[in-house]
Length: 161
Image (cartoon, rainbow, N blue to C red; front, side):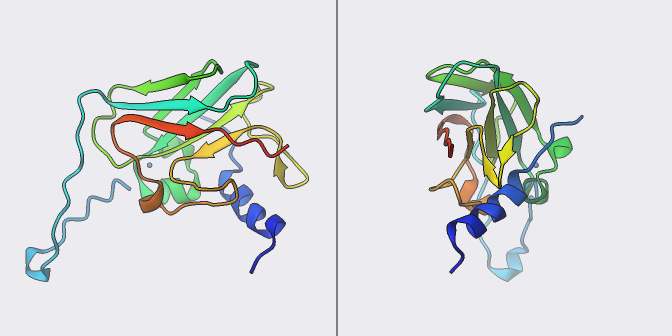
């Protein structure tokens, strides 16, 4: 079993992003295969992310939304369907009114120094972060596990330092 540092290195490899510049795989299985198609959930309210556990109000919270499995797995932010920078506050919310169909995966981080990077010191993030569907900070959930749908979704910011 990998130790904490090895588990975290896997997470860091996944979330090491520089903002520069999302499973839209709507696979339509053949009815002959006997597979049931689950329709996308639709909400006119769009996708709303409630951000909790923010430790201070410095700089911005960066919120990135993927609707494509491959883009999420590679953290290709250029293929993200949503990007916002919001003021960090207790109970802050990011709203994406145009994202009315799911599933989506949400990744966010607290850019406390304003450099648009998730800063890392000795393989450990020094800024807070969260991924939808993650049950602990060292987990990188699959697209399916991390999927959320339009409506209000809460994410808990995790700070490791």
